[in-house]
Length: 321
Image (cartoon, rainbow, N blue to C red; front, side, top):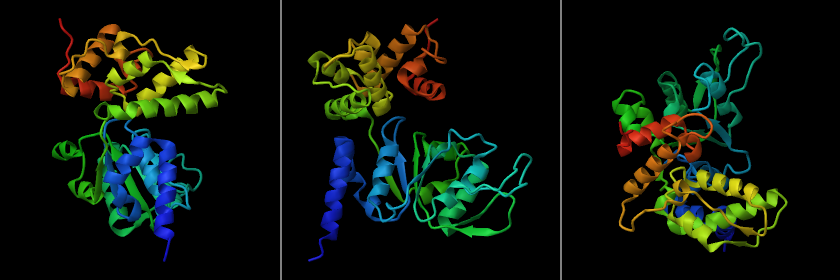
């Protein structure tokens, strides 16, 4: 009997369980098809929910795992450089292009490319991406020569793409080409049972990097972490743990969280939206409604200022006169 499928499943389980238990449970139920096919996958979820981790795990469990996954953060690239970063350029393609550069799609040939925050891709480049998805070909900037690639695309976004389509900011045909295997990743506040294993994972990982040993976690700290709504999701959880490990060295991990972190005053019957709204209000009041800059509300929540402003609008959070 051929044991390779079982061996692959065992390796997959061991690898993912070493990362996060919640990701393993999620992949078993939602993404099992994405890791055994070559279809385009679209990861949907709030900022910080672990989309890159899931993309990397899907790649590492696919037939392309022997080549490194190439990551592109579409939101971090200057608009003037997005095309050359993705598709490459020839020497002299534009002023300042002194050398030929290989683009990310060429680097990902035979592997997977992870396009994070795909909703930020300029509209004029979306047609070129659509062509790569449909035909597997493109031209470098400044060159008439067509380049063919074999690339599996995994895209991710925290934006509402159907709303962007209605606003004329995202191509409908590209959306459906990306939407072959959509995976909705729930926020951490909807999976509170995952908080304790995640806390232990980060405490062990970060304390090991700091050359320290943590033997236990104070019960009041774990309870506070479970009561908090985590609008910044897994990323915020990790940052909070790292900060308190630095502030509180010792064998017992504890964090005396202020009210804005501990989520004090939350009623048992409150909806998740109300919990998030109350928390955002507490943070804004604690920062005198300063959103931007170090120590501002966006910095505390580990969100981009524009993301926080969008969330405030959605939650109906406005400053009282």
